[in-house]
Length: 148
Image 1 (spheres, rainbow, N blue to C red):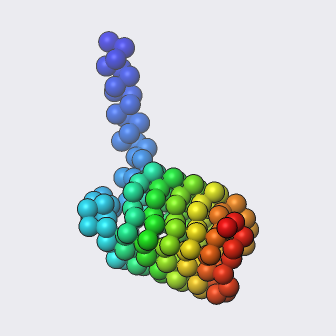
Image 2: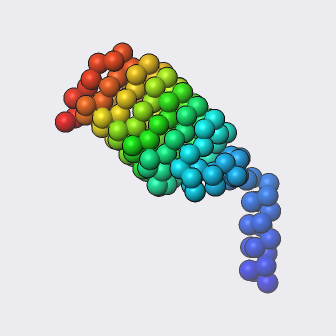
Image 3: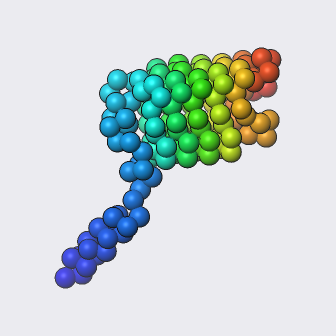
């Protein structure tokens, strides 16, 4: 009897308060995971922690409020993407292009931006304080070797 009540409450909570992954377009998440490409996708609020998204093409994708904590997104292209309020903590972003990408209010604590290209990206110096920068091209075009 206790288990039935617990199950009923759990199902009720799931339907009343859907997870962030449900707020994203599930077909586009599936497309991204299978083809490694999703141009101009709406992945707002996607819940993809610890995801393996290496060699992906996410040109102009909307990843605002996405949780990518601990994900691996290396050798990828996220140029013109919207990463507003995204959680990129502990994310591997090595050798990834972020040309004209919007990082407004994004969290980059312990993110690895080794050899990443942030040319003309909308990102503040305070957001990069706890990120690893080694041979990283900053928004102004200057290379940072701070953590090499």
